[in-house]
Length: 120
Image (cartoon, rainbow, N blue to C red; front, side, top):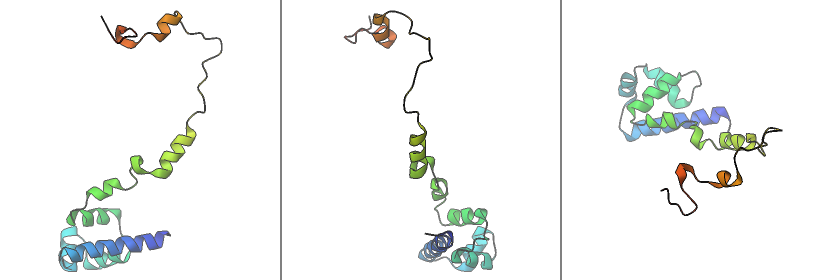
């Protein structure tokens, strides 16, 4: 989907949400704090309408939470895939460094727990 069509779809969704709530263009414009012509441009998907106007429209519609979901890093599939691809393939210890302590110390569990899970 190209950017123009995405904006038009967003505008149509805003208009549908406004109509479902039975809010007139005039009333919506007053509550958003913009002119009626700006609301018309927003609902047509005009790329010149500010993100602040979009945010206020979402607030008036009771959907402001959707703004924070936009490109949420936890649900950005492309971003998550790029993060995964950037992970090192293997971790090498520095040359010449050796682990300290005996083999028994390396297998000991934290907090003094032994192999049976008993810590005292």
